[in-house]
Amino acid sequence: MNLLTMLSLAVGLSMDCMAVSIANGLTMKCLRVHPMLRIALFFGGFQMLMPVLGWLAGLSLRSLIAAFDHWLAFALLLLIGGKMIHEARRREGSCERTDEKMKLLVLTGLAVATSLDALAIGLSLSFLRVAIVTPVLVIGATAFALTLLGIWVGFRFGDRLERYAELVGGLILIGIGLKILVQHLLERG
Image 1 (tube, rainbow, N blue to C red):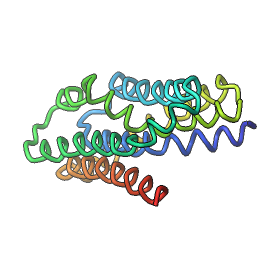
Image 2: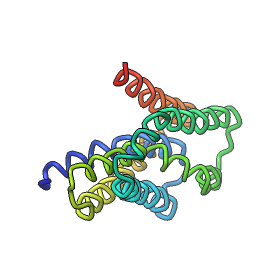
Image 3: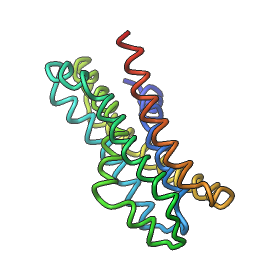
Image 4: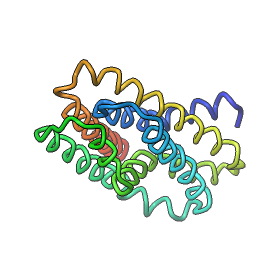
């Protein structure tokens, strides 16, 4: 697999991470390095971990995961997006609110939901007998960088949409969940 193919794959896999990070950036009242790095490390880390797990699992696990991965991603994004919309109705204007929202469980749920496609890529790479180390490093670094960019973009637009930022963020997450579900159902149909 050449570098251009790996980069294209990494960017494609990172688009959900970027969209979710834009949604997170929209809800931030303060742009601080620590929360940004935490989100980027989770997203980049899971984008690295999932292909490795898929690669190790091989093709036998694919049929089990393929049956419900889209539903799992949809449910996680729907729940988290719905929570954001609910909280948009109870606005408080402090920086701590964003940090509280990105607790470990929520952040893990978002990272898992946005990296399920990477699991399938790992399965494919295993089937094609592609060495996993270089693609995983490129995928993780790309997801990390695009997540940071997404948070910054969301934060910048959040000032203009302050009143609706959390609502928009929640709708984005639900939209991503619907996209994953519909895309998977159309592929099966």
